[in-house]
Each structure stands twice: as C-alpha cells, then as structure tokens.
Amino acid sequence: MCGIIGYVGSKNSVPYIIDGLKKLEYRGYDSAGISILQDGKLVTVRAVGKVAELEKAALLENPQGTSGIGHTRWATHGKPSEENSHPHTDCSGEIVVVHNGIIENYLVLRAKLESLGHRFKSETDTEVIAHLIEENLKHVRNGSKEVCLLKAIQKTNKEISGAFAYGVLWAQTPGILIGVKNQSPMVVGIGKGENFLASDVPAFLKHTNKVLFLEDGEIVLIHAKEVKVLDKDGKEKKIKTTKIDWDQQKAEKGGYEHFMLKEIYDQPQAIEDTLRTARTDFGKILGLDTIGLRHLKEVHIIACGTAYHAGLVGKYYIEQFAGIPVSVDLASEYKYRTVPHHQGTLAVAISQSGETADTIGAIKKAKELGFRTLAICNVLGSTLTRICDSTFFTHCGPEISVASTKAFTSQITGLYALAISLGNANGNISQSVFEKLYKELMRLSKAMSESVKMEYDVRHLTRKIYKADRFIFLGRNVNFPIALEGALKLKEVSYRSAEGFAAGEIKHGPISIIDKNTPVFMLMPQDSLFEKMLSACQECRARGAFVVAITTEGGVAEAKKVAHKVIIVPQVNDFLQPILNVVPLQFLAYWIAKRLDCNIDQPRNLAKSVTVE
Ligand code: F6R
Image (cartoon, rainbow, N blue to C red; front, side, top):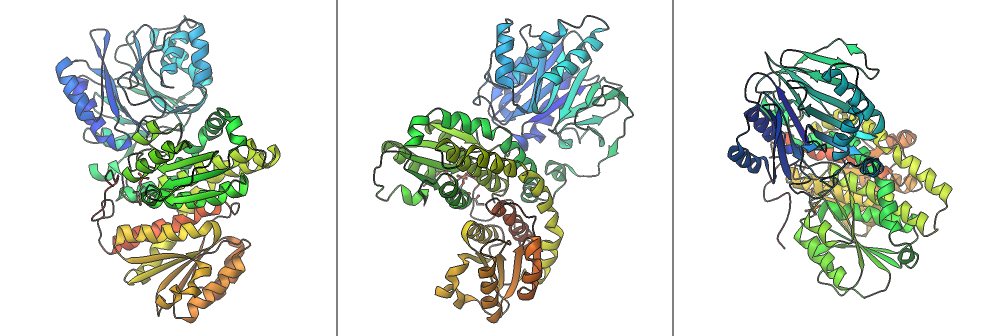
C-alpha cells in the first residue's frame, strides 16, 4: 500500500499535500514526508508516525512552494524510520521520488548503481528509482529539461520490475510533476489552475471531483494548467476524465460502504502482492539455514483468532508437502502449556498486526526453548517481526476493518508457499512437483478475482436467512478451518450465534442443535471427500436444516439434489480451494451484519489489535 499525493498550482502546496495525506492514511501510517520546491530548491520534511507528526514538523520548517509531493508509508522494505520515509532523493538532492509498490529487482539495481558511485541513504527499494533517473539523465542530452526528464524516466521504467506507481519532482523543471503507473494505483485530479496526482481520489476530492484514471504503463506530465498522458508506447493519448459523485467518507473506502467490503474485494490484489516476492523471500529465509532444515523435526504454529484458523490450514500444507509433523496452538494456550523441548523445531507465529500480546508471549517462550522462529506478518517493524529470527511479509496493505479478511487469505497463501518451499528444500517434493505447485499458486489471484463476483448471490441469499438465531458451518480436511473461520466472521460482525465443525463430528453431538430452518453451510468442493459431505447434507436436511452447499462446478448437479441453495466457487487444486471457499462466508457475514444494522467495521467489544493478555 502507501499513499502518494502531488500538487502543482498557484498556491502554497503544503496544506494541500498534508490534507491529502491525512485522507490517505488508511493506506499506511508508519511514517510520512513531503518535498516542496521552494526557490529552485527541494525542501524535504519527514517524520515517523502518523501524518499529524509530519504536520508538526512541517509547521516548524514552514516550507512554501507551488509544487510538491507527499507520501504516507506502509513499510515493505526497511523498517519505519525517518531515513526510510519517502520522498527519497538522488545523490544531488535535485530529484525526489515518492513510490507505492515493490521494485522486485532493487538489490541488483542498487549494487549496479553503487558500483557507478551512487550513495544510498535508506534501506528502501524506492531509492533506486531516484538514482536510476539521475544516472539515466546523464545520458540524455537532447531536448528541453522536461524532455530529458521524461526520457530518463522512460528508460528507468524499462529497467525496474515489479509493481510501481511513483511521482517525481526535479528541481530543474519547476512547475512539472511526473507520475508513472504500473500495477499500483494512480489517479490525477483535474482542478482549475491546479492539478493533483494521487494514489486515490479522497486525497484531492475536496478540491476537484474531475478524475483521470491512469492505465498500467502510462506516464502523466502535470503542469498547473495542463495535463498530458503518454501511453505505454510513449504516444500522447487523448484524456478522458470521470466525474466522481462519492462523498469523502465513501471515497476513502474506495467507493464501498465499509472497509470490510472493500477489503474482501482487495483480495485478488493482496494475493498477487503477497506472492510477488514469496519465492525469493522463502528462498532466502530457508536458504540461510539449509543444514538446520534437513534436521527440522517439527513445526509449531502459534496464532490467535483468524490467524489461528490460517495456521490450521497451514498444518495440512506442511504435513502434505514437507512431510514434517505440525502442531497448531492458540497462542494464549501455548504460553501456559508444557511444551517438550526438541532439537529441530521451527516455531511459526502468524499475525496480521504483529502486536498481539498472546502471540508475542508465545513466541518469546518458543525462543526461550531454543526453537528457531519465523513470523508470518503484515506489518514491517512490528514487535513480532523484531523478535523472530526471520519474517515472511504478507503484502496485503493495512487492514482497517476489525474483522480480518484479506490478511487471512494472504496468510494461507504465504503458508502454502512456505510448505512447498520447505518440501522442496528437504527433498520431500521434487523440483518438478514444486514448479507445478508454484504455477498453480501463481494462478490463485485470478481465481480470486472470479470468486469475489459471487457477492450478489450471497447477498440475495441473506434476505431469507438473516433473522436465524443460529448458523452452522461444516467442512472437512483443509476446509474444516474454513468452517471455523466462517462462524467466527459471522459472530464478530453480526453478533449471531454461529459454530463451525468438522463435518464428520456432527453425529457425535453437535447435530442435536440443528433444528427446523437452521442455516447450515457446507464447504464441499468436488474433491475426494465430496461424497462424505453429501451424506452430511442429507443428515442435516433430515433434521429440517436449510442447507447451503458451497461447491465447485463439477459438484453442482449432485449438490443441488441435497441442498436448498448452491453457491459455486472457481475450482483450483484441492489445497488452494479453502482460500476461495472462505469468500462467500466473508460476504455472508458482511450482508447479515448489514441487514441487522450492526457496526460492521468496528463491532462491539472488539479491537483490531489485542495488545493485552
Ligand atoms: C478476526 C480477527 C481476530 C484476529 C486476532 C489476531 O477477524 O481479526 O481474531 O485475527 O486477534 O490478530 P493478529 O493477526 O493481528 O495477531
């Protein structure tokens, strides 16, 4: 994530930029910075923490200038610190860059630039952009300064890979702001005698609702009174603007009514971003310790709530692909139980926030026992990541809604990548099997884009059932934790009573709570356990339950015979299927809570990050 804002006009840009950054804080808030072009020189102010800290620092420094850029950061490379805050500069200090995304080949580029004499001041991937532009400018001499800058940026874009949207100011081209978009969001606000560049509309909505949405590969040149767009082939393109009729609050949620709904829809991107560097990240994490890996005897997964459910799925993955026994503990239990000490144990802590007190307490215990520790976490620089020996970052951006959705599916995605990487490293799966599994994983984001299209079906279904007192969720194997997660999500946001069970267990007790009209959700993709799930449907239906089958295309005909309603999710391999199967349950929780008029993003009694035991 991260938020970018740029302004070019006739007024002092600072209040516009600070205000825009406040509106973008939902995209990241660990540090922020601005660069303002003042009397031909760039003045940069940066601060760790929320934008309010930057505002205080900017008041002291008091820069003034009619063009400037700003950034609020959600750290991905380099801890949250002033040096790592954007904007970043080249060696001369004349070029400043703000960036959202990940430059995948930044280490190679950095080494090359350092060998050419460039001096780096931060640990970020972003800084390579500023130095590359500086380097490329040395080689383009023909044309005006503006043309030279443009050519240097075009060359830079050919050299960097990954997802990026960035803005550039050069002290030698006053009054010009350049923006680049490739797989990360970037929009332009067209005002009267002033124009804006931003990651998202709320940053400038107060000043203009005339918006130009950029396409991947495009470059925009922004002057106070003119905006030019070059397409991916460098040709000038006719500008087409859109009038936005959202209010400010809705705009911050990307046009959705609640963050929870927005974050459900963020999932294809979150998975893509999480996977972007997964292979190299795990390569590095596991590569550090190949000897230890060969001797890895067991894995302990530790987490709370939704992250614990992700861990339960991870157990199936690691045992299947790496052949290593796994225990999964609620962090609050792990801390207080006797954990036998074994050589060759890896403790994996899963946490969106990295600040959950129970998880931190448990991983500290694992460290005291001498286990190696790995965090799967969404927040760089968080306490958990500082304690653990290594960290795999899920790159799903800030999750604002208390009910976790995109962090959950990103965590499972990360666990799958971990399991197959472990299996490959310890020889449990061959290189060719590993490559096949990885290929399937890389197609997951596309399948997720299909899954989120089912909102309408689920929304329609909730009209019929939202007043039920109790909801039941059933699944088997990798889909059992999804049943638990479906129940947790519904409880959290709608305050309805909901329980998840392993489908094979209901006859051992829970079936007694099923009565007439109890909605029962069956997670039954067409896999080796499909027949058994059909039987469970029959058992519930015989007790009067309202049965909803969540299945894949191949299971529809059979499911229709036993269920009152069938919801179809795209088919992927059996192990990836739970990542898609949870989506209808997320929509279900959302729409029941909405119909019951609950406070969806901030449910009663809950906090986003539980920092007390
Ligand atoms: C559920 C939810 C909580 C968290 C749990 C752990 O929607 O959000 O159950 O999953 O409190 O939080 P993290 O992942 O931040 O450690």
